[in-house]
Image (cartoon, rainbow, N blue to C red; front, top):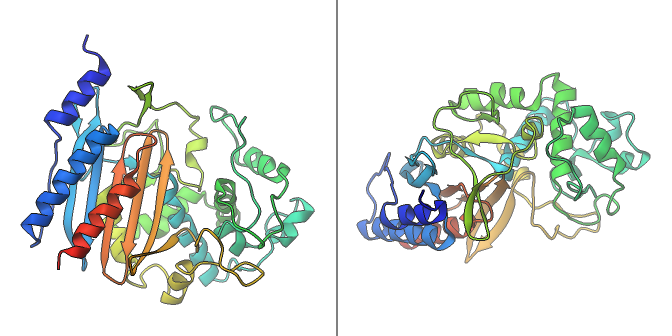
Length: 361
């Protein structure tokens, strides 16, 4: 039997599959350069499969797949291939919360104890705004967290409540998955609907995002890719986690680049949120001392200035998948890369691809 790593590398080197879905006029030189770069970077990082999206001025320039969605079955990636979101899913959680804020069902400066009455006393100083911006003092999954246990929502909440705040709320910044898990529970308590159902009804279905949904290993999911990891240079399948852990609001979604093109388009409109709410999400939250947070984080998004270009972005990592979305909103350019290899760096790819298109006047 052929060694799986040798087989995988030969596939990547000799036949990086790709399918172009939509390609309006663009520089042939840029098109070729991007293709060559992505193939070379996949080979360098040993990435089995990658899905790329480039949207410029509301038009899809590229929505295509490279490499393999499933190495064992030799299934090529295409634009319809479904990847796991990782923390790119946080922007959907933040949008859901802001919808409820606009409806008056949640207040950004409400104390968490308004919704979690049995929470620790320290939570009375934590606001919804601080959870959204990772400035609440919440921690992350502890090193001994059992990802194979079928946690109930109440059990997850009790665990989060048992962890002391790392710093006084609003005084520092530290990325916290548990903060966003808590926001998903908050959405459930306020609406009576599980986080995933609320997203489906209020965001995915209205936007026609037909493949985007909460992760479910049990369901039949067309075009679902497999996640991988490298162990001592050998390609392995992703490690198994319990189905319940795969439904939390810190980033447990399936999506495709085609659906993310619809999402990106909606963010230029007020179909989901008012412009004032979007602007708030895309503004780095200030700490109580008036200084910007060190993460340059708003609500569900990071903000960067890249050589004079404003970029609103996020990446994600989960179960053998790495993802990145970069939105150069003033340039009306969005680049997305979805990969199926743990510890790969799709954010480096989106950044370089964007540089190529920004330079192509």
